[in-house]
Amino acid sequence: MVTIDLNADLGEGFGPWAMGDDAAMFALVTSANVACGGHASDPETMFRTLYLARDNDVVVGAHPSYPDLAGFGRRRLPVSEAEIERFVAAQVGSILAVAALAGHPVRYVKPHGALANVAAAERAVAEAIVRSVQAVDRRLAILAISGTELESAASRAGLRVFSEIYADRAYTAAGQLVPRSAPGAVIHDADAAAARLLAFFDGGAMPTIDGASIKLAADSICVHGDNPAAVAMAARVRSALEGQGLKIAPFLDRA
Image 1 (cartoon, rainbow, N blue to C red):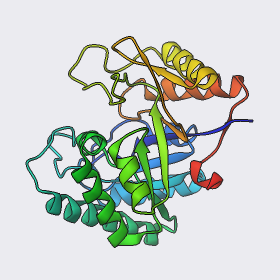
Image 2 (cartoon, rainbow, N blue to C red; image 1 turned 90 degrees about the vertical axis):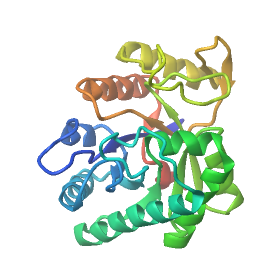
Image 3 (cartoon, helix red, strand yellow; image 1 turned 120 degrees about the vertical axis):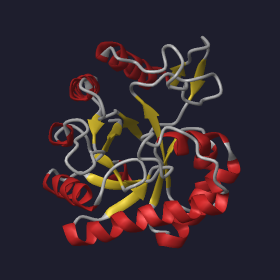
Image 4 (cartoon, helix red, strand yellow; image 1 turned 180 degrees about the horizontal axis):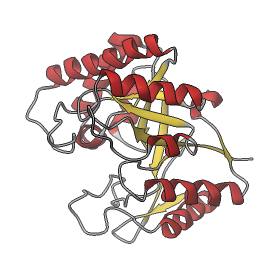
């Protein structure tokens, strides 16, 4: 039986402002990438989200980003690799501390948004993130977009690294995510997303926006939690995978 994890970006509110339906998503996913102050969240939001994760027996990862609340972490900031090391360490350290209070450990790191996309393509940025994670706690695993520089950098450094694919994002022939500003970058049709994933697990190749297909590894599938249709998308994806006989379980439980 093939086992696969479902992960989502959760805890992305700030103060009284909420993003998505975290409670519903926690009933569907097996791993949660929790915002830690860069693109969203604050101590109270982190604590509430960690409590929800604990109550739903969902594994938690830190979700650091460029420090850009106004841009939701989706803009590349003009910072050095040394600055990346420091803000990643600050964000991961913050959620580790709140997790100690909540009684639910943080077990991996997955970069968010623009930081993840830059680290996917640029070795120096990927290595800066890896150095930061090593310094904070080298027991933390890395969840990286499949086939990218971050995946390679984590492996070279001897960290545990796991590969993810996206349920609702289009790919380029180079294995990168299509920029959100481009037409067709985001798949909104839940049935289409589910069908694409089933085809991937049948043949091991992901279609790209350029027409070709690429081979990718998959320990986890990301389903986004930051839009009104997120719960329906996650539910459809999970139902389709289980209907084909796949087992849904945290990727770290298989480590």
